[in-house]
Length: 343
Ligand SMILES: *Cc1c(COP(=O)(O)O)cnc(C)c1O
Image 1 (cartoon, protein in one colour):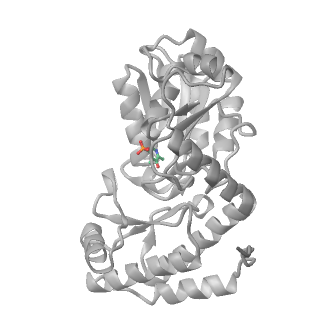
Image 2 (cartoon, helix red, strand yellow):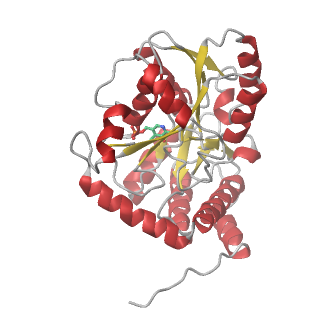
């Protein structure tokens, strides 16, 4: 399903097409976006249960699938209708192991639907809707797909489509049924976002032209270079588990007493670079460096230079040069040269 809406619309579509008033939903607190999705579930009249670690500890790790398995095993009546998790938590720079969540649901022998938000993960981090047995995948245009905001997606399993025939939450704009019917004739039930569909066709050519594996490898390499800079600065990476470092962005924690937003403001004013702010529970405590989409060695180096100069201006004590460390990383992990096509 393709919606002329931001990612939030596709979140709502996933919930309202498959669930009914008062349904229990198991969600997992990985950060700000997981929290917003849970709030939406409440607003729609669902009963979300929020699993996670205490305080902001869960904002440094991915989904702990064993917690999901244990909770589903307790639910012998199968009151829980869906498990909802975020694949790449954009507020922290932490990914979650979706295959492990699938295995946890299967190990518990539970029929709940698996819904995954990969709004910021798609086309930057490896993701497998079919292979991982996801029932509804939610994504959007303006992160790894490099488009302006304005279209978002649901990818749907046969099981989810079947659930949508029995679900009774009110829905109109988001209704899969009308879209499926109209799509058969090559149309939408309302005006599609035609301009962005042309853009989507272009970015898919770009991504598939580079090769999906090359795209993922490029993101992993830039992310590793970025982390080497953070470590050289002597600052902590928001993600505390190296197994789930995000290839999309890196969250940088400030030393105690230093205000991340003050440093962000200096960097914006002096170097015209806008860094992601700390959201929700980590507001003021961290900032985020994005390295997704149309990004290469020099765009990353420029971003890291801006950060390093800004952190110095903000009087944040740095152990050593992160810029230098990132250059060392990039030159010792050289990528295959991009194919240059003559005009
Ligand atoms: C950006 C984002 C959203 C929200 O999408 P909008 O397009 O802003 O509505 C939700 N979840 C994640 C993980 C995101 O990165």
